[in-house]
Amino acid sequence: MWMHYEPVHAVTYFHPRARAAYQAAGLRGYWRGYFAGRAAPLGPIGAAPVAAAFYNFAPHMVSRALPAVWQLATPEEALRSRLTGAVQALAELTYELPERHLAESAELLEAAADTVETAGRVLGAANAALPRGEYPLARLWQAATTLREHRGDGHVAALVTADLDPVETLAWRVAVDMPPQNLLGRGWSEQEWAQARERLAARGWLSADGEPTERGRAGFQAVEDATDHAAARPWRTLGVQRTERLRELLEPIARAGHTVIPADSPIGLPALPG
Image 1 (tube, one colour):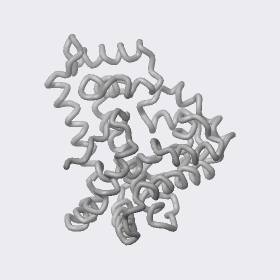
Image 2 (spheres, helix red, strand yellow):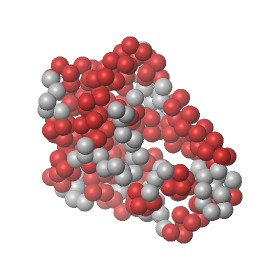
Image 3 (cartoon, one colour):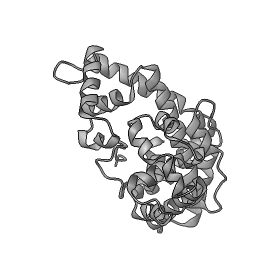
Image 4 (cartoon, one colour):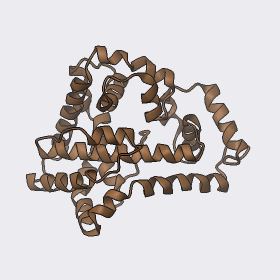
């Protein structure tokens, strides 16, 4: 299901209309819009808790944007901009789908999002507390965002439990399946990257030449399994029949979303099969 709702959310990072909406609010430059839009549900917050919640950005990179960005746009203005841009992006991508398709998708995705367990999940909770939009695409995007941030909170908890720090996590992904350039824009220095690889090798996750070991693969698979387990409640509650119906409804929306998500994006979102 993550592969089907993540593309709905991710248009906010990649579609030109989403970027333009942030710029119209005074948030010029990609990272101002990113940090303001994603952190806005938390209110006029500073850098430290955002770096902790987002997890894989170097703290000094976050502090370049926050809290100064709130002098350019208030959290309320950032929220309006991110929703406006996301809805405009989705409208452009889904104009061929009938209104009833979008309305049913929003209804079912909201039903799933309404069941998320927010305790210990700061970003998921902050997004779940936002008011619903008036129209199907606004409701659809907000529900997708609540679910993805809820899942992300659980993933961070799994990484912490596995004793993987932010830069170690990035270094592991690069070693396994992601080109380094996809993740280098997170603010960590070359020395910090090298030290992270050394720590992964010392714990037996990487070989001497930087290749993933069986121990490392098993360790990270445990993180992935814990992430999936922590994100499973909405789908258990929705039930097999309604979850399958939602998957079918989201399929063309997700495929449309993939058309604006770069293949080399740091999200690591695989293409839908077929």
